[in-house]
Length: 173
Image (tube, rainbow, N blue to C red; front, side, top):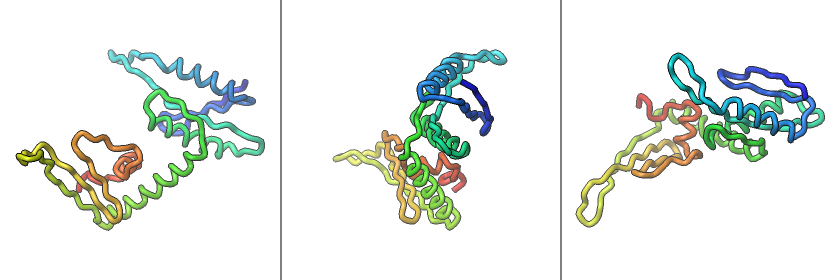
């Protein structure tokens, strides 16, 4: 099995296997994960390296850029599910990427139009009315994001998309 390596982004690489079967790909992925799943000692510090890997199969007539794009979508899905994960390309990742881009564009537009409003509401206990926390709501246009005490934001929320795409919804506002 031949191997090509291409540097994609800051710390992202692609491995193109020629010719390869899905089993060849999985074997290579296992080798990469095994090589990276150890601590590295650097300048007096032990560093743990983890890899998030996206797999995409090629097909007859496929453009390399399309296969890499699909692997990239799968890699970001792997990153979303936690460090040290492997994810296969699935067509549903296309819809997710489209939704993320649409929400991010809407956030940018609402931010430029200064449409966001931050509202703090006290959370009280009954019947004594003692304040035990606050609910924070960020609204803009047709979107509302609410963070309540003890709740975790879901990865598909508007807020998470803003953070993931670099839209500074709360920063500096």
